[in-house]
Image (tube, rainbow, N blue to C red; front, side, top):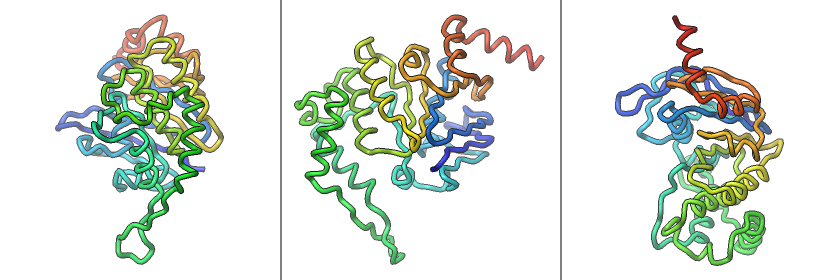
Length: 263
């Protein structure tokens, strides 16, 4: 199964270097957490992997299953199995959740034709199959039936937005999921629901990169590895105990150790 491999990744945003040499390997079946203070580059890493045009790769490699991700368009990355849950999901007034999910699923299932013309070959999910899958995932995540008739994120609370991100992840069934501070702005009840949804996606065939600022979600989703990102670099890697240490000591002790090592 495909692994995500990042080597010496340097990224700039509007001419300013944000990522300064990221090395990271996440294998299928593993959950890696990336923690770090605000402005350290966590969201930049997530958005770069998914191909946001503002984020320019100036050096390094990103491969997924051996394929060069940097050369792939955003839709190609999604079809390859990459998924990003946004920190700040956008609202789409006038588009129902159900229509959005079905359209997105069918777009991901489509593939370029083999005739070299560039035409896309449709492979739509049959409506009965879609309805069955949606009902199963709504039940799993405790989503009310009225949820799917509402416009995407329009008037949603913070918890509802994050729950929809997790519902999308389950519906799209990616091979690799990046969750960008999915726990931010959630009360304890919403956090538990979202965490259970993330944990339910764990399998030997799915890799995950969980980006968070706090340790609390890691009490429910237990990562295999924890990485600390400071000033655009991964400066420390450990197990779940590292997250607990960060919670008790803060990020300043990591900075102090980092700059002491450079002195």
